[in-house]
Amino acid sequence: MKNNGYKTAIFGKWHLGDSFPYRPQDRGFEVSLIHKGGGIGQASDFWGNTYFNPTLWRDGKEEQAWGFCTDIFFQEAIKFIEENRNNPFFVYLSTNAPHEPFTPKEGDLEEYGDRKGLSIKLKRFYALITNIDENIGLLDESLDRLGLR
Image (cartoon, rainbow, N blue to C red; front, side, top):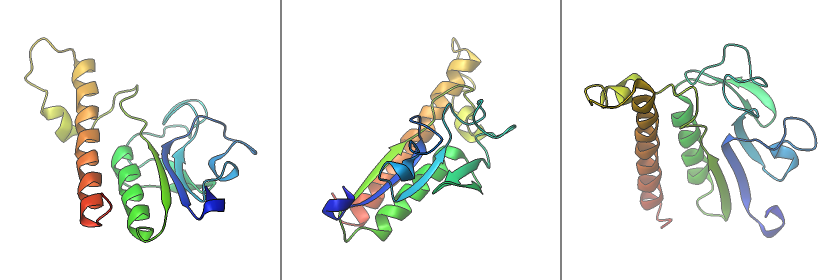
């Protein structure tokens, strides 16, 4: 894609390798903000890493991020789109949620708190989907505002 003038970026999940030559930057992505293979808090990740204020990898270097992981990935994707709106671009946005360990933001979980018949695990799962839906809405609004739809 770069050979055809596209700016390329990935935000979120990357499960194709953590070492050369399988990292995003080795596979054609000019910009990357990812968690390592497996997932946040899993074996290849930093010990104790969580969905909140996670350590992520930006262009191959570790970086402390602030906020909720899904929000961070969408915010960074929107920022990239805004910066490249006048040129061809490709964004690969692959969220790690909804995924075990099902750790949603508290406000999203409250929406499902009184629902009878739902296990706590299912409530957490739905709360993660709620967060993704909200972020898709922000992305849609950004594309409209930038005249890209």
